[in-house]
Image (cartoon, rainbow, N blue to C red):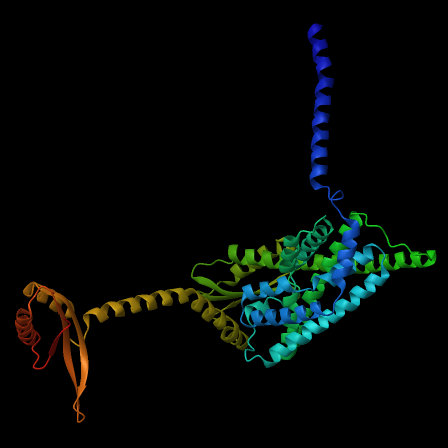
Length: 473
Protein backbone atom coordinates (compact mmCIF):
# COMPACT_ATOMS: atom_id res chain seq x y z
CA UNK A 1 0.00 0.00 0.00
CA UNK A 2 2.76 2.39 0.93
CA UNK A 3 4.62 1.70 -2.31
CA UNK A 4 1.55 2.32 -4.49
CA UNK A 5 0.76 5.53 -2.68
CA UNK A 6 4.27 6.93 -3.13
CA UNK A 7 4.28 6.02 -6.84
CA UNK A 8 0.93 7.65 -7.45
CA UNK A 9 1.92 10.83 -5.68
CA UNK A 10 5.17 11.17 -7.68
CA UNK A 11 3.46 11.21 -11.11
CA UNK A 12 1.75 14.61 -10.80
CA UNK A 13 5.07 16.06 -9.68
CA UNK A 14 6.84 14.70 -12.79
CA UNK A 15 4.14 16.05 -15.08
CA UNK A 16 4.37 19.47 -13.43
CA UNK A 17 8.15 19.42 -13.84
CA UNK A 18 7.83 18.51 -17.55
CA UNK A 19 5.30 21.28 -18.18
CA UNK A 20 7.59 23.75 -16.43
CA UNK A 21 10.49 22.78 -18.68
CA UNK A 22 8.31 23.15 -21.78
CA UNK A 23 7.18 26.59 -20.60
CA UNK A 24 10.79 27.65 -20.09
CA UNK A 25 11.76 26.40 -23.57
CA UNK A 26 8.79 28.17 -25.11
CA UNK A 27 9.65 31.38 -23.28
CA UNK A 28 13.29 31.14 -24.38
CA UNK A 29 12.33 30.64 -28.04
CA UNK A 30 9.85 33.52 -27.95
CA UNK A 31 12.49 35.84 -26.51
CA UNK A 32 15.06 34.55 -28.99
CA UNK A 33 12.92 35.09 -32.09
CA UNK A 34 10.87 38.09 -31.00
CA UNK A 35 11.55 41.18 -33.14
CA UNK A 36 8.65 43.35 -31.95
CA UNK A 37 10.47 44.79 -28.94
CA UNK A 38 13.44 46.24 -30.86
CA UNK A 39 11.34 47.51 -33.77
CA UNK A 40 11.49 51.27 -34.19
CA UNK A 41 8.31 51.92 -36.17
CA UNK A 42 8.51 55.70 -36.46
CA UNK A 43 12.14 55.73 -37.57
CA UNK A 44 11.53 52.85 -39.99
CA UNK A 45 8.72 54.74 -41.73
CA UNK A 46 10.94 57.79 -42.06
CA UNK A 47 13.89 55.79 -43.40
CA UNK A 48 11.81 53.85 -45.92
CA UNK A 49 10.17 57.03 -47.25
CA UNK A 50 13.51 58.83 -47.39
CA UNK A 51 15.17 56.02 -49.38
CA UNK A 52 12.39 56.13 -51.98
CA UNK A 53 13.48 59.55 -53.15
CA UNK A 54 15.45 59.53 -56.38
CA UNK A 55 17.08 62.78 -57.39
CA UNK A 56 20.35 64.67 -57.14
CA UNK A 57 23.00 62.57 -55.43
CA UNK A 58 21.08 59.30 -55.74
CA UNK A 59 20.66 59.78 -59.49
CA UNK A 60 24.40 60.30 -60.04
CA UNK A 61 25.30 57.44 -57.72
CA UNK A 62 23.00 55.16 -59.73
CA UNK A 63 24.48 56.26 -63.07
CA UNK A 64 28.06 55.70 -61.95
CA UNK A 65 27.27 52.38 -60.26
CA UNK A 66 25.59 51.19 -63.48
CA UNK A 67 28.76 52.10 -65.40
CA UNK A 68 30.87 50.17 -62.90
CA UNK A 69 28.56 47.12 -63.04
CA UNK A 70 28.49 47.22 -66.86
CA UNK A 71 32.29 47.24 -66.98
CA UNK A 72 32.41 44.31 -64.55
CA UNK A 73 29.91 42.32 -66.62
CA UNK A 74 31.71 43.26 -69.84
CA UNK A 75 35.03 41.83 -68.63
CA UNK A 76 33.41 39.11 -66.47
CA UNK A 77 34.81 40.48 -63.20
CA UNK A 78 32.71 39.32 -60.24
CA UNK A 79 34.54 41.61 -57.80
CA UNK A 80 33.72 44.72 -59.83
CA UNK A 81 30.05 43.72 -60.13
CA UNK A 82 29.84 43.20 -56.35
CA UNK A 83 31.38 46.62 -55.75
CA UNK A 84 28.79 48.24 -58.02
CA UNK A 85 25.92 46.53 -56.19
CA UNK A 86 27.20 47.89 -52.88
CA UNK A 87 26.80 51.51 -54.00
CA UNK A 88 23.54 51.14 -55.92
CA UNK A 89 20.41 52.87 -54.49
CA UNK A 90 17.94 50.60 -56.36
CA UNK A 91 16.55 48.87 -53.27
CA UNK A 92 14.75 51.90 -51.80
CA UNK A 93 11.70 52.15 -54.10
CA UNK A 94 11.15 48.37 -54.09
CA UNK A 95 11.01 48.27 -50.30
CA UNK A 96 8.78 51.36 -50.43
CA UNK A 97 6.26 49.51 -52.62
CA UNK A 98 5.93 46.56 -50.25
CA UNK A 99 5.87 48.78 -47.17
CA UNK A 100 3.30 51.23 -48.55
CA UNK A 101 0.94 48.40 -49.52
CA UNK A 102 1.26 46.96 -46.00
CA UNK A 103 0.27 50.26 -44.31
CA UNK A 104 -2.31 51.32 -46.95
CA UNK A 105 -0.30 54.41 -47.92
CA UNK A 106 -1.37 55.19 -51.48
CA UNK A 107 0.72 58.36 -51.80
CA UNK A 108 3.91 56.52 -50.83
CA UNK A 109 2.98 53.69 -53.19
CA UNK A 110 2.60 56.10 -56.12
CA UNK A 111 5.89 57.78 -55.28
CA UNK A 112 7.65 54.40 -55.02
CA UNK A 113 6.31 53.21 -58.38
CA UNK A 114 7.30 56.45 -60.13
CA UNK A 115 10.80 56.44 -58.64
CA UNK A 116 11.29 52.76 -59.45
CA UNK A 117 10.24 53.39 -63.05
CA UNK A 118 12.66 56.32 -63.38
CA UNK A 119 15.47 54.26 -61.79
CA UNK A 120 14.91 51.33 -64.13
CA UNK A 121 14.73 53.59 -67.19
CA UNK A 122 17.89 55.50 -66.27
CA UNK A 123 19.76 52.28 -65.45
CA UNK A 124 18.86 50.59 -68.74
CA UNK A 125 19.70 53.75 -70.72
CA UNK A 126 23.10 54.08 -69.02
CA UNK A 127 23.97 50.42 -69.62
CA UNK A 128 22.73 50.67 -73.23
CA UNK A 129 24.99 53.65 -73.95
CA UNK A 130 28.00 51.90 -72.38
CA UNK A 131 27.59 48.65 -74.33
CA UNK A 132 26.82 50.61 -77.50
CA UNK A 133 30.30 52.19 -77.49
CA UNK A 134 32.15 49.31 -75.82
CA UNK A 135 34.46 47.44 -78.23
CA UNK A 136 33.81 44.18 -76.36
CA UNK A 137 30.50 42.74 -77.56
CA UNK A 138 31.01 39.12 -76.50
CA UNK A 139 28.47 37.65 -74.07
CA UNK A 140 30.53 36.85 -70.96
CA UNK A 141 29.49 34.24 -68.34
CA UNK A 142 28.51 37.08 -65.97
CA UNK A 143 26.06 38.42 -68.58
CA UNK A 144 24.64 35.03 -69.54
CA UNK A 145 23.99 34.20 -65.87
CA UNK A 146 21.57 37.17 -65.69
CA UNK A 147 19.25 36.21 -68.56
CA UNK A 148 16.74 33.92 -66.84
CA UNK A 149 15.50 33.44 -63.25
CA UNK A 150 15.90 30.18 -61.34
CA UNK A 151 14.36 28.93 -58.14
CA UNK A 152 17.53 30.04 -56.34
CA UNK A 153 16.97 33.64 -57.47
CA UNK A 154 13.42 33.53 -56.10
CA UNK A 155 14.51 32.08 -52.75
CA UNK A 156 17.30 34.64 -52.41
CA UNK A 157 14.85 37.46 -53.17
CA UNK A 158 12.34 36.16 -50.59
CA UNK A 159 14.77 35.67 -47.72
CA UNK A 160 16.93 38.63 -48.72
CA UNK A 161 13.92 40.93 -48.76
CA UNK A 162 12.84 39.64 -45.35
CA UNK A 163 16.33 40.21 -43.92
CA UNK A 164 16.42 43.70 -45.44
CA UNK A 165 13.16 44.97 -43.89
CA UNK A 166 13.99 43.38 -40.53
CA UNK A 167 17.38 45.12 -40.56
CA UNK A 168 15.72 48.43 -41.43
CA UNK A 169 13.11 48.12 -38.65
CA UNK A 170 15.63 47.40 -35.89
CA UNK A 171 16.61 50.26 -33.63
CA UNK A 172 19.88 51.34 -35.18
CA UNK A 173 19.59 49.73 -38.62
CA UNK A 174 22.16 47.02 -39.37
CA UNK A 175 24.13 48.46 -42.28
CA UNK A 176 26.08 45.25 -42.99
CA UNK A 177 22.83 43.33 -43.52
CA UNK A 178 21.50 46.00 -45.88
CA UNK A 179 24.69 45.90 -47.95
CA UNK A 180 24.72 42.09 -47.91
CA UNK A 181 21.17 41.94 -49.24
CA UNK A 182 22.09 44.41 -51.99
CA UNK A 183 24.78 41.95 -53.13
CA UNK A 184 22.77 38.76 -52.68
CA UNK A 185 19.62 39.88 -54.50
CA UNK A 186 21.67 41.31 -57.41
CA UNK A 187 19.15 43.82 -58.78
CA UNK A 188 21.62 45.86 -60.81
CA UNK A 189 23.30 43.21 -63.07
CA UNK A 190 20.00 42.20 -64.75
CA UNK A 191 19.30 45.84 -65.66
CA UNK A 192 22.81 46.14 -67.14
CA UNK A 193 22.13 42.94 -69.10
CA UNK A 194 18.92 44.51 -70.45
CA UNK A 195 21.02 47.41 -71.74
CA UNK A 196 23.49 44.93 -73.26
CA UNK A 197 20.69 43.04 -75.00
CA UNK A 198 19.29 46.26 -76.46
CA UNK A 199 22.75 47.41 -77.58
CA UNK A 200 23.43 44.20 -79.53
CA UNK A 201 19.74 43.84 -80.55
CA UNK A 202 19.36 40.53 -78.74
CA UNK A 203 15.75 40.77 -77.57
CA UNK A 204 15.89 37.37 -75.86
CA UNK A 205 18.76 38.58 -73.64
CA UNK A 206 17.00 41.84 -72.85
CA UNK A 207 13.64 40.19 -72.12
CA UNK A 208 15.12 37.44 -69.95
CA UNK A 209 17.17 39.90 -67.89
CA UNK A 210 14.17 42.21 -67.40
CA UNK A 211 12.13 39.18 -66.32
CA UNK A 212 14.81 38.29 -63.74
CA UNK A 213 14.83 41.86 -62.39
CA UNK A 214 11.03 41.85 -62.16
CA UNK A 215 10.99 38.55 -60.29
CA UNK A 216 13.57 39.76 -57.77
CA UNK A 217 11.73 43.05 -57.27
CA UNK A 218 8.33 41.39 -56.77
CA UNK A 219 9.56 38.94 -54.17
CA UNK A 220 11.57 41.58 -52.28
CA UNK A 221 8.45 43.77 -52.16
CA UNK A 222 6.36 40.75 -51.15
CA UNK A 223 8.73 39.88 -48.29
CA UNK A 224 8.64 43.51 -47.16
CA UNK A 225 4.85 43.43 -47.19
CA UNK A 226 4.63 40.22 -45.13
CA UNK A 227 7.19 41.29 -42.50
CA UNK A 228 5.60 44.74 -42.18
CA UNK A 229 2.22 43.10 -41.55
CA UNK A 230 3.71 40.72 -38.97
CA UNK A 231 5.32 43.65 -37.13
CA UNK A 232 1.92 45.40 -36.92
CA UNK A 233 2.95 48.69 -38.46
CA UNK A 234 0.08 51.17 -38.00
CA UNK A 235 -2.10 51.81 -41.04
CA UNK A 236 -2.20 55.29 -42.49
CA UNK A 237 -5.32 57.05 -41.26
CA UNK A 238 -7.46 59.15 -43.57
CA UNK A 239 -9.96 61.77 -42.49
CA UNK A 240 -12.39 60.52 -45.10
CA UNK A 241 -13.66 57.09 -44.00
CA UNK A 242 -14.72 56.21 -47.53
CA UNK A 243 -11.22 56.93 -48.83
CA UNK A 244 -9.76 54.81 -46.02
CA UNK A 245 -11.93 51.85 -47.02
CA UNK A 246 -11.14 52.28 -50.71
CA UNK A 247 -7.43 52.52 -49.93
CA UNK A 248 -7.55 49.38 -47.81
CA UNK A 249 -9.35 47.53 -50.61
CA UNK A 250 -6.85 48.76 -53.19
CA UNK A 251 -3.91 47.68 -51.05
CA UNK A 252 -5.47 44.27 -50.47
CA UNK A 253 -6.18 43.88 -54.20
CA UNK A 254 -2.59 44.78 -55.10
CA UNK A 255 -1.28 42.31 -52.52
CA UNK A 256 -3.49 39.53 -53.94
CA UNK A 257 -2.57 40.36 -57.54
CA UNK A 258 1.12 40.16 -56.64
CA UNK A 259 0.95 37.11 -54.39
CA UNK A 260 -1.06 34.77 -56.63
CA UNK A 261 1.18 35.07 -59.75
CA UNK A 262 4.23 34.98 -57.50
CA UNK A 263 3.13 31.70 -55.92
CA UNK A 264 2.40 30.22 -59.36
CA UNK A 265 5.80 31.37 -60.65
CA UNK A 266 7.56 29.96 -57.60
CA UNK A 267 5.89 26.57 -58.07
CA UNK A 268 6.74 26.50 -61.79
CA UNK A 269 10.37 27.41 -61.21
CA UNK A 270 10.59 24.80 -58.45
CA UNK A 271 9.19 22.13 -60.78
CA UNK A 272 11.65 23.14 -63.51
CA UNK A 273 14.58 22.97 -61.08
CA UNK A 274 13.46 19.53 -59.88
CA UNK A 275 13.12 18.38 -63.52
CA UNK A 276 16.67 19.50 -64.34
CA UNK A 277 18.08 17.94 -61.18
CA UNK A 278 16.30 14.60 -61.67
CA UNK A 279 17.31 14.29 -65.34
CA UNK A 280 20.92 14.99 -64.40
CA UNK A 281 20.81 12.24 -61.74
CA UNK A 282 19.17 9.87 -64.24
CA UNK A 283 21.86 10.40 -66.88
CA UNK A 284 24.67 10.00 -64.36
CA UNK A 285 23.28 6.91 -62.61
CA UNK A 286 21.32 5.03 -65.30
CA UNK A 287 22.79 5.78 -68.74
CA UNK A 288 25.69 3.34 -68.62
CA UNK A 289 26.73 0.74 -71.18
CA UNK A 290 30.11 -1.01 -71.66
CA UNK A 291 32.01 0.56 -74.55
CA UNK A 292 29.68 3.57 -74.88
CA UNK A 293 30.08 7.00 -73.37
CA UNK A 294 27.76 9.98 -72.94
CA UNK A 295 29.35 13.03 -74.60
CA UNK A 296 26.44 15.45 -74.16
CA UNK A 297 22.85 15.62 -72.97
CA UNK A 298 20.14 18.27 -73.18
CA UNK A 299 17.03 18.74 -71.01
CA UNK A 300 14.01 20.67 -72.26
CA UNK A 301 11.48 21.33 -69.52
CA UNK A 302 8.86 22.78 -71.86
CA UNK A 303 8.81 19.88 -74.32
CA UNK A 304 9.65 17.30 -71.60
CA UNK A 305 12.36 15.74 -73.77
CA UNK A 306 15.83 14.51 -72.72
CA UNK A 307 18.33 14.16 -75.60
CA UNK A 308 21.38 11.99 -74.94
CA UNK A 309 24.35 11.73 -77.32
CA UNK A 310 26.52 8.62 -77.19
CA UNK A 311 29.78 7.63 -78.86
CA UNK A 312 31.54 4.28 -78.91
CA UNK A 313 29.93 0.86 -79.02
CA UNK A 314 26.30 0.93 -80.29
CA UNK A 315 23.72 0.39 -77.54
CA UNK A 316 21.01 -2.20 -78.40
CA UNK A 317 17.45 -0.93 -78.76
CA UNK A 318 16.32 -3.20 -75.91
CA UNK A 319 18.70 -1.43 -73.55
CA UNK A 320 17.45 1.98 -74.70
CA UNK A 321 13.83 0.88 -74.14
CA UNK A 322 14.80 -0.22 -70.63
CA UNK A 323 16.29 3.22 -69.96
CA UNK A 324 13.09 4.88 -71.22
CA UNK A 325 10.95 2.75 -68.91
CA UNK A 326 13.22 3.53 -65.94
CA UNK A 327 12.91 7.23 -66.76
CA UNK A 328 9.11 7.07 -66.59
CA UNK A 329 9.29 5.31 -63.22
CA UNK A 330 10.64 8.53 -61.67
CA UNK A 331 7.53 10.47 -60.51
CA UNK A 332 8.89 13.87 -61.55
CA UNK A 333 9.82 12.55 -65.04
CA UNK A 334 6.85 10.27 -65.81
CA UNK A 335 5.78 12.39 -68.82
CA UNK A 336 9.30 12.82 -70.16
CA UNK A 337 10.49 11.30 -73.44
CA UNK A 338 14.00 9.89 -73.87
CA UNK A 339 15.80 10.31 -77.19
CA UNK A 340 19.18 8.59 -77.59
CA UNK A 341 21.47 9.63 -80.45
CA UNK A 342 24.40 7.34 -81.23
CA UNK A 343 27.52 7.88 -83.28
CA UNK A 344 26.53 5.07 -85.66
CA UNK A 345 23.38 6.99 -86.64
CA UNK A 346 24.21 8.60 -90.00
CA UNK A 347 20.98 10.56 -90.39
CA UNK A 348 21.31 14.18 -91.43
CA UNK A 349 19.76 15.35 -88.15
CA UNK A 350 22.26 13.36 -86.09
CA UNK A 351 25.17 14.52 -88.21
CA UNK A 352 24.10 18.11 -87.89
CA UNK A 353 23.72 17.87 -84.11
CA UNK A 354 27.04 16.09 -83.70
CA UNK A 355 28.83 18.69 -85.77
CA UNK A 356 27.28 21.67 -84.01
CA UNK A 357 26.45 20.77 -80.41
CA UNK A 358 28.35 17.63 -79.50
CA UNK A 359 31.62 18.55 -81.18
CA UNK A 360 31.50 21.97 -79.59
CA UNK A 361 30.90 20.36 -76.22
CA UNK A 362 33.76 17.91 -76.69
CA UNK A 363 36.17 20.66 -77.73
CA UNK A 364 35.11 22.76 -74.76
CA UNK A 365 35.65 19.87 -72.35
CA UNK A 366 39.01 19.03 -73.89
CA UNK A 367 40.11 22.65 -73.61
CA UNK A 368 39.04 23.00 -70.00
CA UNK A 369 40.45 19.64 -68.91
CA UNK A 370 43.80 20.07 -70.66
CA UNK A 371 44.38 23.76 -70.09
CA UNK A 372 46.08 23.20 -66.75
CA UNK A 373 48.21 20.40 -68.19
CA UNK A 374 49.38 22.67 -71.02
CA UNK A 375 50.16 25.48 -68.57
CA UNK A 376 52.22 23.08 -66.42
CA UNK A 377 54.16 21.90 -69.46
CA UNK A 378 54.81 25.49 -70.56
CA UNK A 379 56.15 26.34 -67.11
CA UNK A 380 58.43 23.29 -67.19
CA UNK A 381 59.71 24.20 -70.66
CA UNK A 382 60.53 27.73 -69.48
CA UNK A 383 62.40 26.29 -66.49
CA UNK A 384 64.40 23.93 -68.69
CA UNK A 385 65.23 26.75 -71.09
CA UNK A 386 66.55 28.82 -68.21
CA UNK A 387 68.66 25.90 -66.99
CA UNK A 388 69.90 25.23 -70.51
CA UNK A 389 70.92 28.84 -70.89
CA UNK A 390 73.39 28.42 -68.06
CA UNK A 391 75.27 25.76 -70.01
CA UNK A 392 74.74 26.93 -73.58
CA UNK A 393 76.85 30.04 -74.11
CA UNK A 394 77.69 29.75 -77.83
CA UNK A 395 79.38 26.37 -77.39
CA UNK A 396 81.52 27.33 -74.34
CA UNK A 397 81.09 24.92 -71.37
CA UNK A 398 81.30 27.81 -68.94
CA UNK A 399 80.59 25.84 -65.76
CA UNK A 400 83.37 23.32 -66.49
CA UNK A 401 85.81 26.04 -67.54
CA UNK A 402 85.15 28.04 -64.36
CA UNK A 403 85.81 25.01 -62.13
CA UNK A 404 89.06 24.15 -63.93
CA UNK A 405 90.23 27.79 -63.84
CA UNK A 406 89.71 27.94 -60.07
CA UNK A 407 91.79 24.78 -59.63
CA UNK A 408 94.61 26.10 -61.81
CA UNK A 409 94.59 29.68 -60.50
CA UNK A 410 94.08 29.89 -56.75
CA UNK A 411 94.13 33.71 -56.72
CA UNK A 412 91.16 33.91 -59.11
CA UNK A 413 88.16 35.49 -57.30
CA UNK A 414 85.63 36.01 -60.10
CA UNK A 415 85.19 34.89 -63.70
CA UNK A 416 82.54 35.97 -66.23
CA UNK A 417 82.03 35.34 -69.92
CA UNK A 418 80.27 37.09 -72.82
CA UNK A 419 80.47 37.38 -76.59
CA UNK A 420 81.37 40.93 -77.59
CA UNK A 421 80.56 42.34 -81.02
CA UNK A 422 83.63 44.24 -82.37
CA UNK A 423 83.81 46.21 -85.61
CA UNK A 424 86.55 48.06 -87.50
CA UNK A 425 83.80 49.67 -89.60
CA UNK A 426 84.43 47.31 -92.48
CA UNK A 427 83.29 44.09 -90.83
CA UNK A 428 81.85 42.87 -87.53
CA UNK A 429 83.44 40.07 -85.49
CA UNK A 430 82.29 38.22 -82.41
CA UNK A 431 85.08 38.05 -79.83
CA UNK A 432 84.75 35.67 -76.84
CA UNK A 433 85.64 37.78 -73.78
CA UNK A 434 86.48 36.65 -70.24
CA UNK A 435 86.46 39.13 -67.37
CA UNK A 436 88.45 38.12 -64.30
CA UNK A 437 88.93 39.49 -60.82
CA UNK A 438 92.06 38.55 -58.86
CA UNK A 439 92.81 38.51 -55.17
CA UNK A 440 93.73 42.07 -54.07
CA UNK A 441 96.82 40.72 -52.28
CA UNK A 442 98.28 39.72 -55.66
CA UNK A 443 100.95 42.15 -56.89
CA UNK A 444 100.67 43.86 -60.27
CA UNK A 445 103.52 41.85 -61.76
CA UNK A 446 102.10 38.57 -60.52
CA UNK A 447 98.63 39.55 -61.77
CA UNK A 448 100.03 40.33 -65.24
CA UNK A 449 101.85 37.01 -65.32
CA UNK A 450 98.72 35.12 -64.24
CA UNK A 451 96.67 36.91 -66.90
CA UNK A 452 99.08 35.77 -69.67
CA UNK A 453 99.04 32.19 -68.42
CA UNK A 454 95.20 32.22 -68.16
CA UNK A 455 94.85 33.58 -71.71
CA UNK A 456 97.16 30.91 -73.13
CA UNK A 457 95.39 28.17 -71.18
CA UNK A 458 91.96 29.31 -72.41
CA UNK A 459 93.14 29.45 -76.04
CA UNK A 460 94.41 25.87 -75.82
CA UNK A 461 91.48 24.60 -73.71
CA UNK A 462 88.82 26.08 -75.98
CA UNK A 463 90.73 25.77 -79.25
CA UNK A 464 90.18 29.43 -80.04
CA UNK A 465 92.51 31.61 -82.09
CA UNK A 466 91.02 34.85 -80.87
CA UNK A 467 89.72 35.66 -77.41
CA UNK A 468 90.02 38.49 -74.94
CA UNK A 469 90.82 38.30 -71.24
CA UNK A 470 90.27 41.50 -69.21
CA UNK A 471 91.08 42.20 -65.60
CA UNK A 472 88.44 43.82 -63.38
CA UNK A 473 91.03 45.08 -60.87
